[in-house]
Image 1 (tube, rainbow, N blue to C red):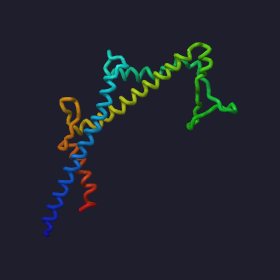
Image 2: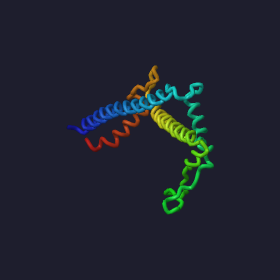
Image 3: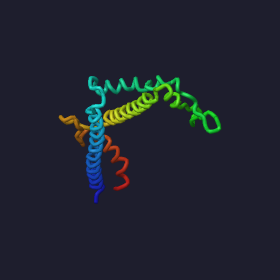
Image 4: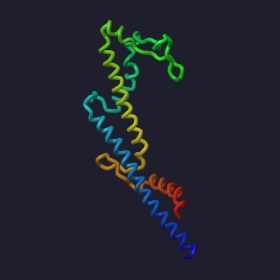
Length: 177
């Protein structure tokens, strides 16, 4: 076979490989986008939060309020001590604090403290779901086409998808031909 036909075969192979890679890449981005959108939609539809806000506004509000939820109980904070009476420190050498729930009980605030702890954990969880999935959408939106229903559609002709497929092909193809 001539050198020219070898080059032609090589280009055909590269083209086929790139198209297949682009198809997989496009589907992968669309799947990631849609999974994240589904989680955010579920969060938006959840009736446990105040819908007089948008989800974005509500999460922003939580981000400012949540770190302070336990401030009212600061007077019950004490250095944690081990069985020998030594102050406990974390791996970075910082003093570890704990809350004196017995003192809280005496003052009749233990239940509201425990409710605040639960609320803080629940808020932090909601914020994490929101942040993680918003980041996925941010990272994938330029690689997909958004349909009328707001869902991502795999688009193997998307410029960024094609670029990624071409560079992947150039990295991997020399090993097979």
